[in-house]
Length: 82
Image 1 (cartoon, helix red, strand yellow):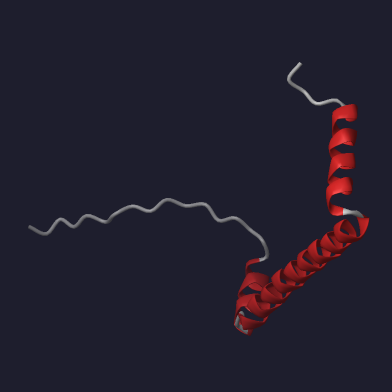
Image 2 (cartoon, helix red, strand yellow):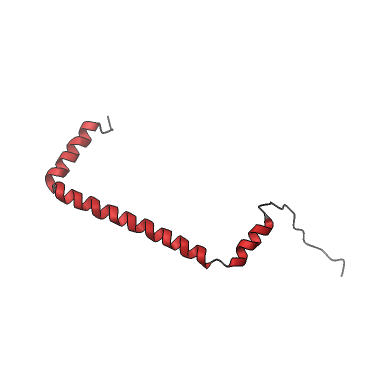
């Protein structure tokens, strides 16, 4: 109750195929796949551009640190001047 069984989904699929036809559904699938592929290529290209825009000395700075975590505490210096 409340959930759809496999038979419900098969009936829905059959109705969709009867309404649109297999050729139109195939074309829609190809168009959707092409759009997803284009989106992935666009994201990959944007990441490559961002990596290329980083200055070269940024990599040298990270290499000097070597992944060490430095912990410390910042305190405000108070002067005795009045």
